[in-house]
Image (cartoon, rainbow, N blue to C red; front, side):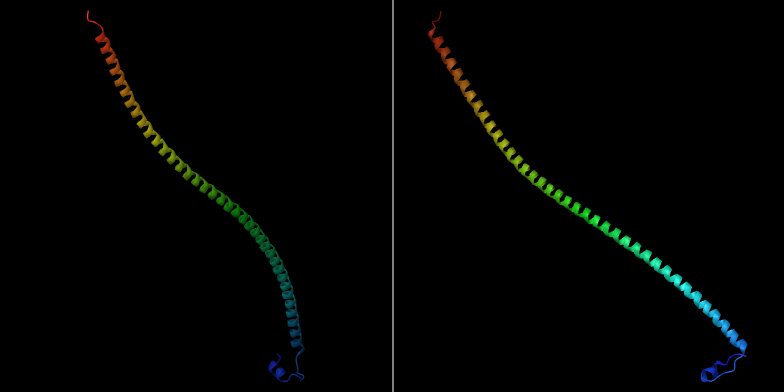
Length: 158
């Protein structure tokens, strides 16, 4: 005979006839369910500990990774800063070298122009010297001829 649960629910305050075997079955089921609840509670507690341990480990790993990332980022920022400074120095040196090259090119142009002017002057002076030498040579020949002619004229013929 099973318990008629509908009657029990309708008449909660009234006594109902129940066989002893049914009550013993119910008690056995309750004890089994209590053991299962206790077992599940233990499993749940074990899972909580596992989850907490895993969470703590993951939190430590995350913290370590964040710390490592921050160190790397700081190091990288320092290196980037050094490279940027080096780049600025090199750019400044390059600009100074370019400016010096422009200055030297301007000086070279000036020296070349001066050299060209001096060559022209030298050419002019050489031409003038050659002209004077030729004039001197002509004058010298004339004088020599004139002396020879005088000497020839003054000597009696034999």
